[in-house]
Length: 293
DNA sequence: CACTTGACCTGTCCGC
DNA sequence: TGCGGACAGGTCAAGT
Image (cartoon, rainbow, N blue to C red):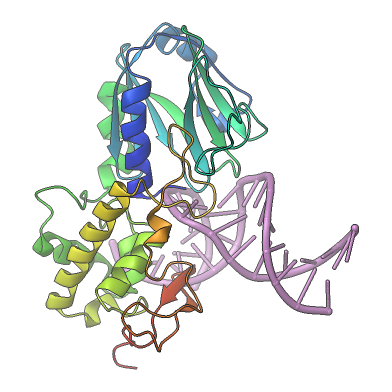
């Protein structure tokens, strides 16, 4: 599911729902989905409480009172859903909520709290993972060492963006902004949305883009991320937040999954779907002409 | 080092 | 209705 706005929405939800609740039990049926030994789980998770929920890039960090942290990566189809003790599945079948009962066949990890509520880690494709790390070691993790700046943070200037892009100057701009070591949190949806906003063809080589256009892209990435957070993220297929609810950014998307529909800028032009950086890519062929073509 | 491709998985959709 | 193939929000480890 998750790009920065979706992970941020889950983080905000969990911060309201799971803090300071003693954990009775954590279970999994799949070692890859929960990377920790049974004795570590018994010692450092069971009996502890989640005291803080952080996000870095697309990673969630559940900080425990035991000074350990559960790191969570949702990858493509991961979900973290909290279910209160008195929750009635299917009541009213609201269209913005999860339909199925939990746990279900894609449940990988269950955290049970002493008040009989549960946090479910569901992941259809099994790419996602949770792992237990001493909180003091979190910053030493390989990913944390390599990941680039947060796009919505104060210090992330157009100059820093330009400079970090130089490490990928011979590849396409889409591949470059998907690279988490360049900047954190951009995935396939917001890459396409921001490149359309900045009127840059996704297959343009980084070295062929003027600094003024890079600044436009910097601005678009920030705006599209901010808007999506306000809309609770994008539910393209599976994404739901910590309460089991969908996000509505897809209602505001300009190009993503809109192939065949008119470009919002040029109603005569139709959005096309092409392949760039090995990913399905959506463009307006009129406002995103390939430079030097 | 930088770049590209395949692998990790399950489910769905589309064409024959 | 069934079957094969392509594709899906993301990273990694390999290959060149």
